[in-house]
Length: 107
Image 1 (cartoon, rainbow, N blue to C red):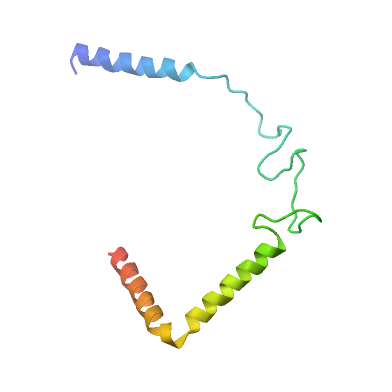
Image 2 (cartoon, rainbow, N blue to C red; image 1 turned 90 degrees about the vertical axis):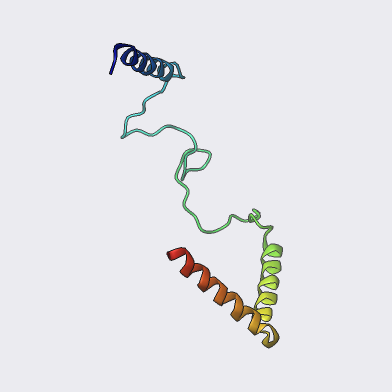
């Protein structure tokens, strides 16, 4: 490497290093300690919350029992469509297409 190229590389590296150090300060938290406040598995108070039950009076993400019933009706209609003898050929053709696509992507 000639002298000019070497200087250009070193100057570029120095610029990148200085730019990286110009960001906000990072506050280090030791491994054994936890910050107060909410986290991935914690509620607003910072305590771990593991529950599969809904609290009384809270709605689910899909609208509660009404949403569950609507989803059930949609699923029932899908199952009827899937088991309809008139549509069996269409479904079989769709499954063959999916298999072909999987085989094609494995190549």
